[in-house]
View 1 (cartoon, rainbow, N blue to C red):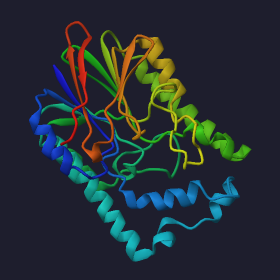
View 2: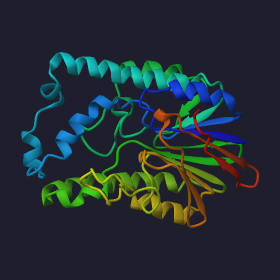
View 3: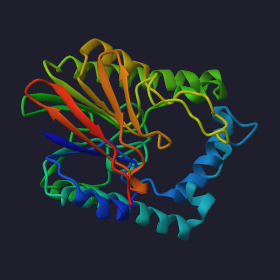
View 4: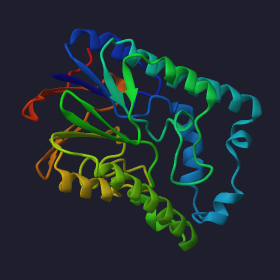
Length: 292
């Protein structure tokens, strides 16, 4: 069975539309960030990277997105972001192959975040899109079986350890509480994993494809990886782990006995083709086609 693995598309499918038809595959896997348009990055930098206000009180003083962009522009961007998610998921579904997908931290409006209040809530109009998907299925926070393989999906937002030092005690306590809930939920699903398995994440596990290499990023050298992902992988030994989020990476690495694959930045036409022997739970080949 050949897996088409892709993510971090952010509504930009043109290069993928040209390249993917050149390749054979049987199953589609999305690792998140179908929406999350680039226009949001200016606000993210404003909220996270502003000097001198790293605590919760400082965060509370900052402008809301509506104030930052202006009411009219913000409304336009919300519409554009929705259309990016809708069009990308529809594109993946129209590839005509079965598949599973999880959401990314950039897919704010497309899933319910169960580990904290007022972070992300799925909108009813998005349900209309998700319910129409015939081929690819949402396994965000879930476990499904296909051809004898157990697939564990755990996407969405996670608090990165990279910016731990910028948080005051109150902020860090809130993060610890939220991530404690996330870890508990992850371990709940982990117990359901039996036999041959594939894990699908958005964020990488700690220690693999997780270090911020961009020297302009104030968190350069920090990890965006999940410690409990790493622990779960070492415990259950899935033969394949798929992740994204860190768009500066594309490749494959071992974590224990498990092969971890980051398919690269889909918005630039990057993806991976993973051929496996599903009966043996064994990876045959991993290829990273180049967009031409």
